[in-house]
Length: 177
Image 1 (cartoon, one colour):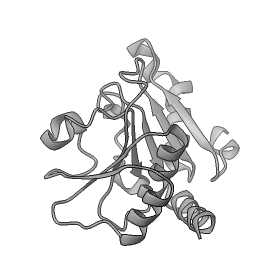
Image 2 (image 1 turned 120 degrees about the vertical axis):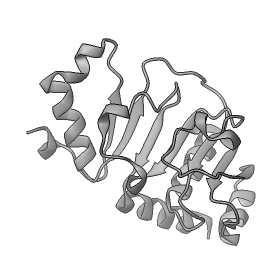
Image 3 (image 1 turned 90 degrees about the vertical axis):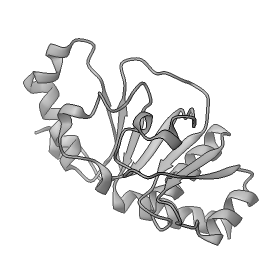
């Protein structure tokens, strides 16, 4: 029932329950499962948010990861820096660097030895980023929802579906050119 209400262009907010017992209720697990299997973007919000200011962190599988463009849009809206975490040696696309400069977003690239889906607090190079929001692509989200909230560490996570990311990048390109 819930899944039929979620459209691909929605952002479904999943807020961490205040009581651990709430995580196992049929109502909560039904909404969570529907969100995880939908094409919609998912905003996973921890019970307590650690920071309300700070950069946006895009945890990318590589320089071609389209979730970077969504993170850029958010950084513009929040008037914050954008940090892009990639594997060592991955270079950012020149058009991204150019576009970020044109719209006034400070861009920083960090290299991680771990996979983007790992907890940033456990990846040494990301521990100092002090981000207020993490953005990842849907393909980086584990379907194991039991660890979803424990991995947040007080930082909201925006999981962007591939269709949404593509349209965001195309829209950004149209606006900038």
